[in-house]
Image (cartoon, rainbow, N blue to C red; front, side, top):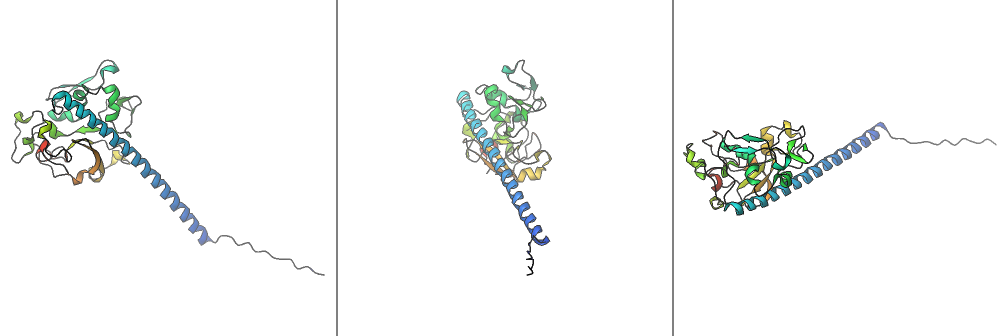
Amino acid sequence: MEERAKSTSHKGFTLLELLIVIVVVATLIALSVAGLSQARTAARTTLCLGHMRQLGTTLQQYWAASREVFPFAPAGTVFATSPPEDGPTSTAVSGNHFDLRVYWTTPVSRVAPWKENFVNWVCPSSKRMPGLPWKSASGDIAYPSYVYVFGFMARPSVWMDGSTANADQLRSVRLADVRFPSGKAAFFDQEMGHLPNRASSSEEFRSQSATPILFVDGHSTQRRLSEATKPATNPFTGHAWPLHDTRDGAAGCDF
């Protein structure tokens, strides 16, 4: 009795099905990577905004110690570039009145010592020497990530229509001069460590990107510089930069 061999057929993937599977897997991987990157960026941004809120608390302490006057220093002031606790203090002499935008740490250190506080003045994504956030990863002097707005270094009249460069205008600003505390930026993140490839980012891209900002009333949030009030020309610098040169200076409103 003859037995017929039973044939079994094994159906495999066709080329088209295999390509579809590859595309689906690649898409899922891309979505996962993008989601992870966005989650990391969001986490870094949250930390950055937290640092700025702590800076807001420090600013309130400064007001309490200075009778509600904002940090101020004239051109030619000798600023520290390292804390006294770090050994012999290195210094720099400002050549421009508005250099205080990065040297504000010197007057503020009177109420917030560098050793304990400088880490809160740096974007968490910034590359600094471990334990020495006032130095870059290569050991050079590094400024804080958060810059101090020009409008608090001179009288509001500097940024009014028809203003000229009058040295008498380079005087301290009082908290009472601020008319819109919740809409007036005091510091903003110039380093933008949360941006991907920030070193090669164009000015236009940075302007359109969400920038961490600390407002006078103490709240911090992200806003695009492109959405800020159109700036006025600063007669001392010849520039009109968003936030720095807002019309009416400290008395103006940025958003």
